[in-house]
Length: 333
Image (tube, rainbow, N blue to C red; front, side, top):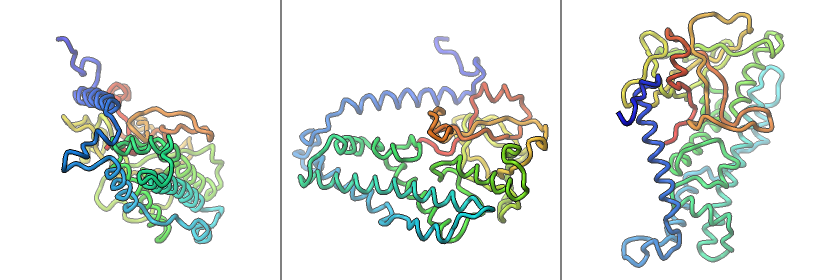
């Protein structure tokens, strides 16, 4: 055949769908670059269609209506969740609230300035032009992404995720730490995981460099109803190129035409490195986005890779590596 089946290379049949989706996205992104962005091309003279100015104003107003109208009160948060030796999660929460505030301020200020620029009240700078072009094409402006969490989502789902993240942190702030943490909601996921390790290390007086996470998948209904004695329950992860067998409690082959499946809640349990079991497993890499690549930040952590999670498996690890199996905290749509 002219095109080999993906099974020849050890890939799942769904790899063909993934390839086609990527090629289609690349083609559509290229076509978007050829579209004119001036108001005369928007069809304002054709009767029913709105002008570019009207479209930008309504889009900006719609996004502003969905966002919280006030920032998180960091002073009140630090007073309610002070820095304590045995609970590093207080520090994690306050840092995440600060990052959320920065992102919300950038989104709000750029949209307010854009609305003024559309009305001619301020100069339309090159930065605002880029924001306007992104909004018209349904993409997230680069200005926002510079201070945002990594995301490949289009504009609508991205705004929805921003709102969901603020609701997650607000619930934590008002009602205390949740029983199950939404790992997808953190800006700096590594800080959250380090905080969980630090709590365990200080509780049992063990050097933190002698411990790491062991992982337990809790796929039974009601398995995460109460807070664990040690470690943290997390949710919000997705499996790519594989599925989860709820009966055998292990990795399984993905079903045809199903590219991603939710991973059940997991217990991230800190333990001494010399106490890990030798049960058959796959060291599944966990990424923030499906891009599966990032850069080293100033903290020495990757901007995309989070950690390896141990998932039970009866197949050799090389099988899942050839399949390209990975876990993600955020999908593309």
